[in-house]
Length: 539
Image (cartoon, rainbow, N blue to C red; front, side, top):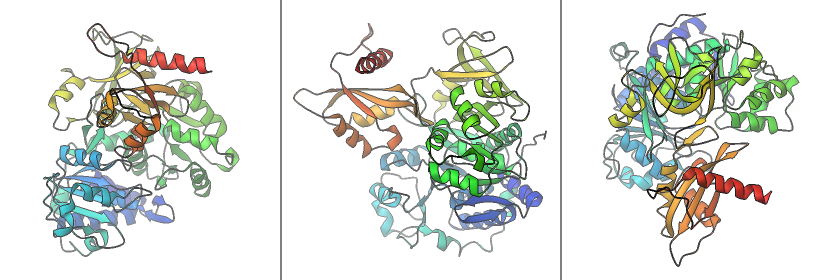
């Protein structure tokens, strides 16, 4: 077992290049880079960013798909002491606008397009001024703090630095003073999570938060320099960056990924690359296990992690042959992993039926939500976490931070669970008013705010219903204004134009008789009961 010493991400890249120089670090499609090649790319791109005007301490939003450019950008930003702000590739223009403004981002790094999403076109809806200005001199009415746009495109777009043009800059810049000033406990990322409020909150994490979290996960998975780690999670989530890339980096493993998840292609890549480790949320495994071409005899997987019910973990063990598979518990505000089993030493039944023990240096307890009293083994209550993995706070939201972390340093997760007599954690669901669908935390209030923009809507309540594939599915209950008519399909189409697809309701129900409390508030839990009963009657 290794011992952790706090270091910066830039130093970790240098050290990995020294230890694992010629070994492969990253494989994306047909592009391959060794540790030494990657370290060189980070040095070069760091100079380019400085030449483009990015400074230590700047916030820089990164709107790119999985790939070498995402890793180049984020690790280079960390190397020069800037703070990266990952942006979900499924976001639409208004969601991007909120994050850019709330994070005080001065620079945006984006792809011109990805799959069916036209990133640059969406951005120009917000800042049409870009095309008439020189690169680095943006003056945007809607995003006043943003000054620089760097675009991954095959052509030079007006008002932007292209990746190609950046490579002509900064060759003479001395990185040593900048790199030497970066400290392990300074902010390196602001990750936006929906949480329990109507607007996403920016979770501030340090170099040490996420780098040590990746290291400890890799220790529990038993990773080593011979491992090839298939990481299908999106990099804009901590699952992809921390549980995947940083776990690999701190153990000399090779990180294998795809620009976007595809179940059939994932199985083919794992077979071709002879992957020995895998990590991902429940939904990704479910899709892979539904593929008719799945043949566990063609896979070489020995260890891995997931998040989901015990049956999902058992299915992965049996159908994919991942003998070292384990469940884990995590939350964005804790970098994200809090507890995970030891895949080499812990009994398989414990790994399937529990979420392991806390990471070294991390404390966990269960409290009674109304009283805050600490509960005994096997008693159900709110999961609380304390330790080096906790966030610095929510960016520019001190009141929300104070609600989440108490005076004794305990993060109140809003999650329901228990800790058994062995000290093993079990996550049961969410106390907070959040829908968790396909690994995404979705704020009902945020979705409601979008739906309220429809002129036909009088009232809306968004809830989550159980779903075998997604964990929960988003459902909208709507009362229309008098004299108006609408169909569920019309409401869903309205939502698709305004928000990321994972937030769009899968079902819409029209309601006029709401279950209310004595104080006039809608009882969402009764809405859930009503709809589940309605579905049961339908058979």
